Length: 152
Image 1 (tube, rainbow, N blue to C red):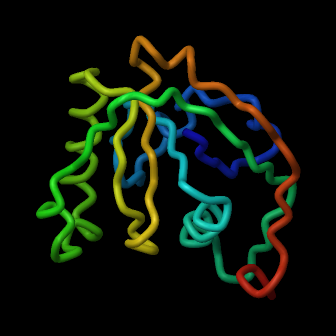
Image 2 (cartoon, rainbow, N blue to C red):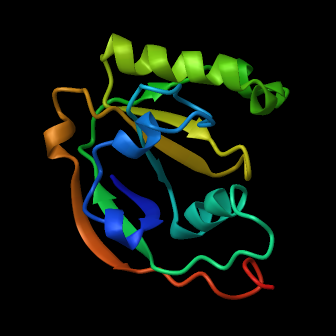
């Protein structure tokens, strides 16, 4: 399976999940729990980043990573969890869910709908899983984010 990640270019070789471990406002993991956030398309990556940036900020020096993940069984969250979209505003619930996914350590990947575009998916990768060493960056390129999504 191929997934994508957009990050600052100075972190383009780091897929350890350590950056999310140091942040407090992640949707699917709490502070201190590592997780690698990826998406099913480069476009979704840009939209996901956009939600966290100030309106007039134009990101520079970003890279797009294409990441290959082994075709293994994913943790699929019950559709009923996402049915009414209340989960989008319940960070403590989703963080505990994601922390449990990491701690239980049964799956390499958890597939969840994007909070920004519910018909697209994020693939959350467990850096603690025994198969994480099979997750590899297959391509990296500069990811300019100019245009109407990011403009002054």
